[in-house]
Length: 438
Image (cartoon, rainbow, N blue to C red; front, top):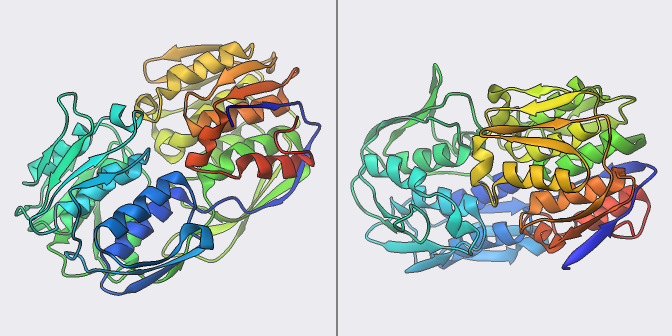
């Protein structure tokens, strides 16, 4: 699917259960692999990224029954120190796998494993993982540029440590906490602002006492075992994000999103939508492994107001920030995002690419070192853009096409398969149009 054209839409409506949460699926599969029991994971996300994680767990000698495509996998946990890693693990494009799995591999006896990935993943910084784990005594090696290939040697005695992160990062924090399971003493992570806490919630659900004080989260090791419960993975807020924005701009009269993960560390986009004038209603549901879930109902905003996203809000919506740029294009005034330098080290430099895409679509946008500004009032003209292999921009381009004056052609649209293979079909269903909206 090299390119897809998305034409303007008159409205979106209906009920949608978007794919399951990508972040929780990654973590559930990894922790199931080191649990002391057999774990059934229902409704896992089927994607290239999560497939890489399941393959990595299986490659470490863990019996896996079923497939992501089946809607359920059963993993016979090998125990916290029972992985038998192969010499090499291919992470494909899965940054979560490459950054979190080393936290478990450092605790496995006597194994040296090289984690590698595709060209995009090889550009992403791994020294930010190697450095704090190295301070705990772990042996890790990156390339000369601090990127993959990333070698991890297990079985080295680890000691607990206090880490103060300059930039809030759920992936860095998670790697540290996972390594802390094997370390002697207390491991603590301080962040300037709280990041996503899926790892902490799953560890607590697996029986690990988590330590929370002041601005830090931690645990005391070494931990003997994990007992992750069977779980059904909730729907992914990040996967819903593009549809949420489409609903905010085009709902007729509303769109309902069911079984959605409502972790406060993931709902920043909802707060921004409300602030910009979008009608949002939340119907609470049952918690899953400590994760709050429910139904979110979104209506069309009669008029969008520009807003500023402050640094403290960024961690709760890091993946959704480019969509805020699209909202800003349709709002009255100037929308500004600051404190988002983390966007520069995603699948692409999302700040630079966002500004390039919006400019190509006739929107005035400006790049800042840690964010961007978008001038609204003129809407989206349309045109041709390229995702650059980044699934988030493929989805953004699709929604831009729906709200544009002339339509948008998105090059390399196949990048959506990384996280959401059925995105175009789901969006078309809400539009009541053929896939692609053409």
